[in-house]
Length: 215
Image (cartoon, rainbow, N blue to C red; front, side):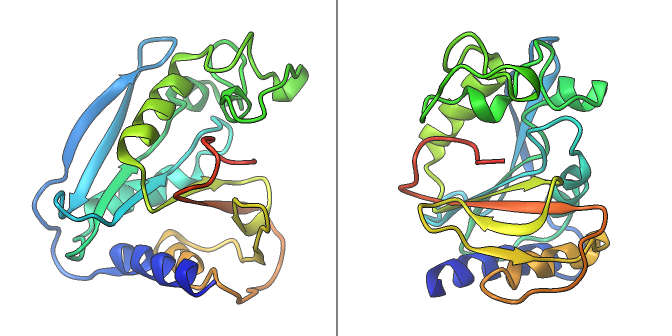
């Protein structure tokens, strides 16, 4: 828990750093979605740092609130000592359509190899593991980057979930963007109130199974 709190605290400091925006983030196109939309990653901080952190704004198209947090991160001044990567969305087609799945109707979280099984309906897992270009892009990117911690935003619950064999759940408020980072920094044990419109943060550490999240 202490290690988790430390890394989440670093992420919070990144978001809450004050002052004018720093040098423009380096942006790269990781690949394209089913419908050809670019999936973009932005790198901030120190590329030479061994401490890699990944923040993903959205993987489900009908849960786009985290994109605003990702965009806020990209616009702020990063602290030194961290190589921070931010992907606003791994599912731009779903965001455009307002759907959970991608343009093929696949729930990208269920399309990763770890414990893949055939699912139908809202959790349709695709024809086989990594059948979708978006999940292949995310899988390859995670394999290359190997972040010490990755933070995936969702909206279906009011909690922070450590994506591991012993999850840590923290109830949080529905907060404005500027304060949303505080929930990340305080994710190690502080409940914060009511369950309203919903928001969730899934935390994945290096060494966890290769997957996006459980949401």
